[in-house]
Amino acid sequence: MLLKKATLLFILILFFSFSISLPALAVELKLVSEYEGGKLYKAGNLNVVVLRGTYREMGRQEGKLLKEQLAQMYKVAIEETYVKEVGLKLEDINDTTRGIFAVYPKRFQDIIYGMAETSGLELDKLLALDQINVLPIISETAVHCSAIVAWGEYTGGGPLVFGRNFDYPEYYEKFNPYLSVIVYQPEDAVPTAVVGYPGGVTAMHGLNKDGLFMELNDGAASCGTASVDNRQMTLLYITSFLFDSSNITQLDAALNSIRLGLAEIFTVADKNTAFAYECSIDDTKKRMPDKDGLLVETNHFVNPAWNMEPTEGGETRSYTRYKNLIALGEKYKGKFNAQVMRQVLDTPITLGGATRPNLAIQQLVVVPAELKMWIKALGNPGWTELDLKPLFENK
Image (cartoon, rainbow, N blue to C red; front, side, top):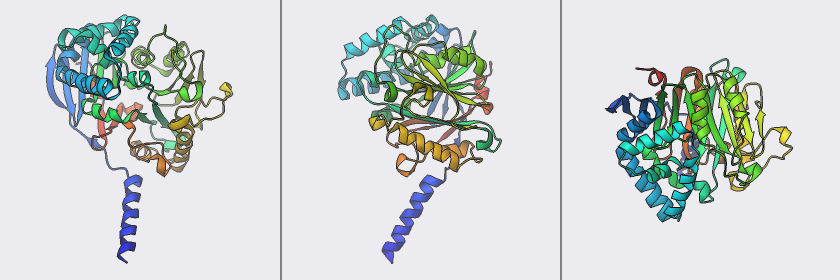
């Protein structure tokens, strides 16, 4: 009898753990410091930095406001993890990041140069931090991400909601104490917020003031790891295109004008709809939604114009994650909102979801129409709700 009760209790705990999404923590922004017009806030465990002015000025503000975090991040991520643990040579890291930086557009170079003036870190260290999300590729570590977007009938007429898993190596959990939301307020561009680590002008996901959201997934499952060197870093496109696009028509034109150095997949949305852009090193193909009101993207190309069979991509389990998210989309059709999307992202792959709990380094839920974002970081407790609207306002 006791055994049966214990078994029933375990089943109930398991059920409620994955079937009920706990309310997100709506935290109050606490002002920590200011410098030359920039402001550093804390939102729970997150750094939230608002930068204003020229690109050099914004870099100076970030360097000063995050000076302590930049130094700590370099020690933990570069010295202790990538050099000592992963086994990369520091000179190889520096050679690679210098080459990437040499072809950056001027405005992004100016941000880094500004940080060098106030952070106390020399340029090479800042370049290594800027390219933190490229180093797993250099070390030949597999990366995998997922995206699911619901709108229209799938939200019951409610606003479009975007769910995103950023899956990277397990050791990234050690970097999450420094996780930051960087809000850029350029003089000549659309205010844009990116989620990442101190020192990075590159980004894997971001939202701008006009309600455009972008994220990036690896596409090696379909096209392999062939690369082209003489092209700009793909991770710049998130920040760059959000700076320069006020609507999804402009964003579409920008994405259809690029050739990438690696196979990648962009998933984009505004408040009304979503699309994916599957990019080889030779071509870019726009992919329409899977259903009217539902788009799912993992790490393999789905557009039938590629004439490719779906692939698991080895350990990425891309096709399984894709099918699981499609099934969850149908399960919750008509019910999707931010809370349901968090529940979907909290569902592990072992229970029919797409999330590997030890690899889901960052998870985001975004409602572009409301300029709201919910962020969950591996090692940090629960989801944190962040209202970006007041942070986008010029003050």
